[in-house]
Length: 127
Image (cartoon, rainbow, N blue to C red; front, side):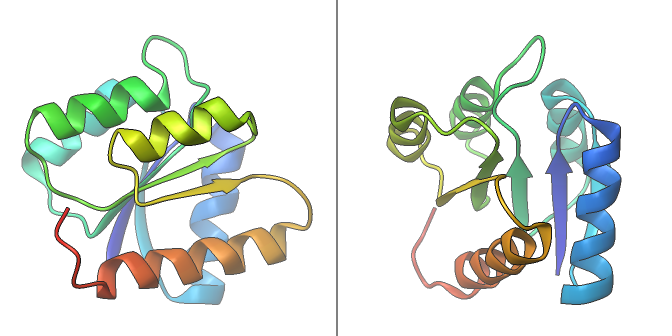
C-alpha cells in the first residue's frame, strides 16, 4: 500500500506521513502542490491520493477534475479543513471516493483516514 499525500502545509504533510506510516502501516509520498502531484502520478504508482482542498494555484476540486479528465483511475480522498457542504458535494460529484474533515483529535482523524484508505482500496467498485 502506497499513497500520495497532497497538501500545501509542510508541517501537516509531515504529521500525516508520520501518523499513517507509524500507526497505520501505510507508506506515503508527500507533495506540496497539485501540479507536483500530477507529475508524480504520471511516473509513479499509488493506491490512493489523499488531497487537501485549499491549496494555491490549483484547489483540490480542480486537481480531482484534472485527474479524472486524464483518465487516471485512482481512488481519491479529500482530506480538508474546509467543511462547507458545497465543497463536499463538488468532491463527490467529480469522483472523490471520500471526504474527511481535518478537525478534532489528530489520532481520531487519522484513524478515520486510515479506515477510509483501506476501504477504498479493498472496494470492488471501479473508479
